Image 1: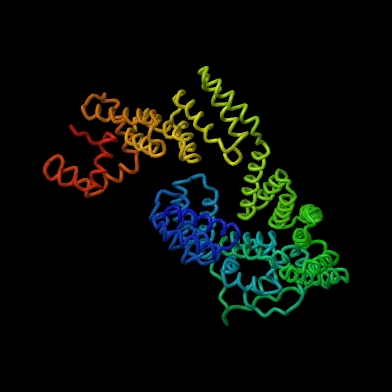
Image 2: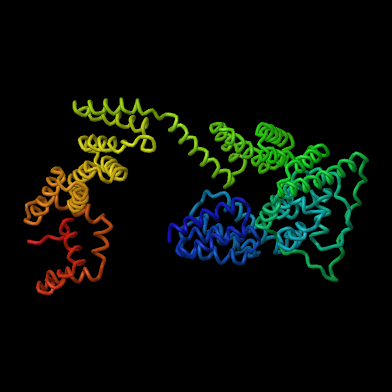
Length: 597
């Protein structure tokens, strides 16, 4: 169940990073069902709810987080954010204060506490009045996001910073009254009737690439971030006693050049939409024509270049795809475009480089893309490319002749008792002739296991012996190597099982028979009390780490059997007639947990 929860948590984190908050909530909810005591899952779901402006469920999850992990500072950060979104200023301040007691250097909670106290003071009678919290209300942000005249503003960093400044300090509103975007947003946010006009030139210029980005689904996270940001006092009540808000100043008239640019941008966005539809229908020549026309009309939106690069990729023109991606990145830097759009262009370039077989270059490009914007899809592509590069390098290194030479060098070093050198030669032989290319690679694992045994590196030797058996189940030497290593670690019961398994494949193997006899003698010696106290304790400690032994000792029936063996020998004899119980008793005896004298 914990593994399922971890996988669902990873999916939730990826959805959250991509701005898909509703999807993230679904994944975290499923993860909680699999692991209901995991405080991190409730914390992550609280953050997802808050990002959508759903502060009531965010508060419930935050409370559960604190209940499960009261000494975790982030839980109080989630609690403070949820209270803040619900305009519970005093409760938010109290939560942030408790969090800072656990993590005094946390800057986010310091800012949260400051904002909560400022909001409480404003609500109690700030000179700015109740207008200060207007742009924290979900319904106000919804109006801005759905109104065609203001929705592009939510993708502009300077506009969002303006709203956050007003939320923190309502008196700063005076500084922004001259901004046409703020005037328009104020009217829309208050629900006043606004004449449907084109946005001002300044607003249109600022919306540029973000208007296109909203079509690709990237403006929504910005709106969600605003909904989860700082909050101010109660919004102004619209009633008869309230004087009407001052009408905004009329917009300045645009020049002919500004009108022409605005019209070209609108036409370019229409061409982009047409290109997107053609791309979905796999009509790549038509899509290319639409994107070319969009770029001719308006060259300040790098998503046009990025989309054209995707068409080139599908058509197999990888050089053209890479050229468009490079140009998109360069123009993005010049225009200070959204980092997500820049990252997307880089990822598409990486995809083209992978297609060309230039894996090392692709890895570098993916890494740069992740520094711009950490995206789950790009991270997955990076990991896949790194694995492909490693596999390609290993394949290029294969040379069975050199592998045979290294094996002979290893054999000679082993005979001369130069075991560290022998390990190096066998390791190199495996690199030159891995199991995928060398049908006798199992012998190299067997030989290296023998070297590790001589060097006392028992765990490494055991891994090689097991790999030898996996590759060649009928090779008796593999069982012999493994049995010897288990004998040296005093795991006699496991060694007996290994030797017996080997004898199934080679019944007359003398080495396996001798190994089996040694283990039986060691167990008998232990039962006679001839084993030293230190050896006995070491053996029992190893046995207690065995999951099978733990399962036997935790079985209520077996606990009763063991008690009967001490108190009622006749009843114990009855128990031993049961094959399964008899087998478990033998296991405990062989493991050194139970001694029969």
